[in-house]
Every structure is written in structure tokens, then in C-alpha cells.
Length: 127
Image 1 (cartoon, helix red, strand yellow):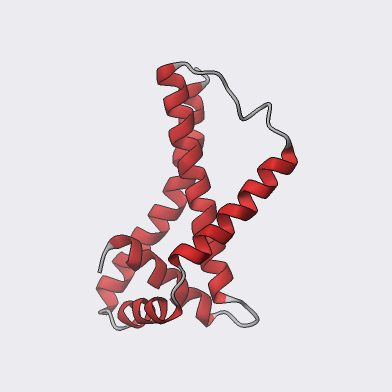
Image 2 (spheres, one colour):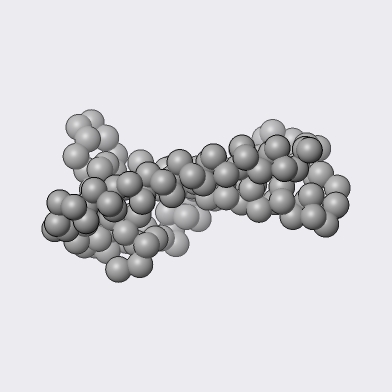
């Protein structure tokens, strides 16, 4: 299983354990947030390297909101497959305890690291 599928399986297995939750929406929302931060990190670094104008600051907030909702919907339509996600979650749950702890750490590192990398790149971009 690839790392991306592992991340989805781990997030889905965590979300299924929550009471009063919607596991599909939780996983899609979490992955979209991570991808937003990754896209903005790449944008900021490329903007610094190639010195092109900042077009994000002049964009209307309504358009940004619609873009975010649109990205959420497109992600859901492209990546969501309940049978696959349940299969990934079952594979993740069947891991050995030690491998599962390492997997948890790597998934959290990926999620938190993606967001931290954005904030670290801000100091590079605005230096």
C-alpha cells in the first residue's frame, strides 16, 4: 500500500472510531486542508524564486471561498471510494502494534509537517 493510501486508511480508521462524526467528511476535510497548505507553500517558494506578482492578495474573498468549496467537492469526487477506504482502514488496523505506532507517527508528521512547512517557508519568502 502506498503512503497516500496509508494516510487515508489511518485517517479513516481514526474517524470511524469517533462518535457523532462523519468519517468521510473528516478525512476529505483534513486532506483538503493539508493540500491547501502544500499548494500555498509551493506557490510562496515559486513566487520568491521567480519573482512573479502576488495575485492572491487582490482576489475577492468570495472567489477564494468558492475555490475552497470547489476543491473540497472535486477531491471528494476524485478520491472518495468507500470500499477502498474501508479496505485501507482494515489493512491499517491489522498492522502489528509496533508498526502501527510508527505509522501513526508518520501520518501525524505528514499532517503537521505540511502545515509547519508552510509557516517555515513564510520566513524564507518574506526575508
